Image (cartoon, rainbow, N blue to C red; front, side, top):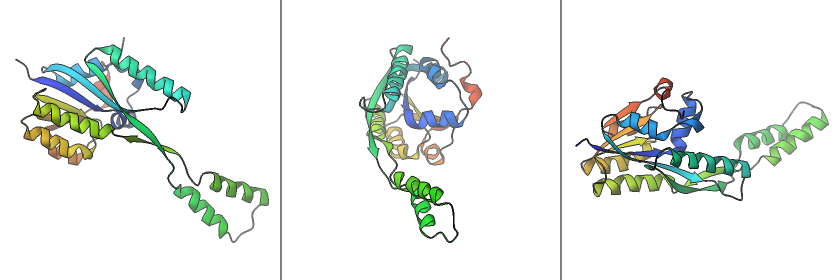
Length: 212
């Protein structure tokens, strides 16, 4: 019997690394094709895609776009499943805006008054810049990777991420006797040291992984 394989996709990290690698048409990627190409001769049991869910009362266009993307993921093959964390808004201090405010406060040369007021307003308006922060997603993936290993739900796991924060979970899964391969266009040295192997992908690797 071929080894049973499950893919665990760190959606946020995976998406941004694909973009940095120049992989295009990300919304058209067929994750059934990606999965089969990753596992090779192993028996593909499933692909678990972990991502933070956009709030419905936020940006309606972004929400609708994410919903379409997730629906397409699951439509590729019933073995592809989505596992949702949450996204929370944070308002960290904008260091660039603070620096601009300090610069204007200590300005020693004369500039146009209107320009000065507009720059000051710009620094004030962007003093706190809202960002979205994923919550629970990495924890969900790490727990599932370990628990499924201990319950003998797979023989080999493929972690589609280069995030070194998964190192303890990878180590625990390997201690349970499972093979764990990290897969990414980026190279994560810490994760590579803990994994059974690190599979580095380039843009050409994805050529046959799109929907027809």
